[in-house]
Length: 357
Image (cartoon, rainbow, N blue to C red; front, side, top):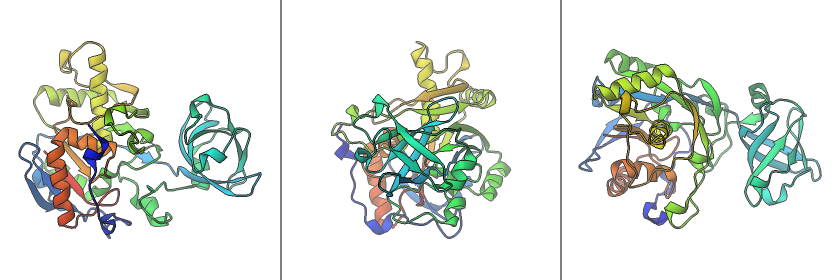
């Protein structure tokens, strides 16, 4: 398939630059993936759309203040780094994505706002890419990011981060720090909404996938099959795996909140397939533990775990719109997006949401 098959024309004014005035006060589109039928609701209506036996899966990864500006010692110019993950056990060397990467070379030093200094070290994997390995003489912890970093708002939000973003670009249930972008489907959920779901007897549990380049790096290939996903790490705790496997065995629907939850569940099922087993063998659809994945879902992909999906409206030609198209059908998704544009839905991270069933 061609990347251009997933293009749609989006008026710029529909790209949400700020969150809604009150968390959770968003439009909600319901999409029947069998018929393509769309219906319009508000987020407040969600508990009425979910059957009580459903098991909801949320990603509890917490956004790190991962965008950090350093001053290049040779020129005095500011350089923007996006910190992705540490690549040594001491957390002294970090994989970063850097602006104007061609000008940032091994041996160059950068001073950060609190006075700390790091240097780019040689890493053959980074040759010809926008990535650079940055080495500090001490371990980098979350306190360092709190002192030096900014909320890593996506590039289509054309403004600097504010104090409000520290709260609003974070899920209320976020717990495990490590993401370079928010798992934004969760932004629609308030503690009150979670209580309403509890009151209806809708069970939930959490997985952790730290959002990195696998989620948000653009597709640059003409043919989507040629696109290579970057690796991201995820964890499924023993009790969570037990609950998911029990629900699948009982025929209860699994509702994944966000594409990162989808990727975690389906990546775990792929581990079973790699063992020459079928998901469901021995009552196992997912495996507990920590693993990495570069899973890429596009039309033709067979879903083994996820039955329903709650998600945002995604960017044209992205791996995310390909993922929801794999789940609901490309034609259904493109028609639903056309309807969303006609009805002035807000798009992307701070935008409105969709329930696919």
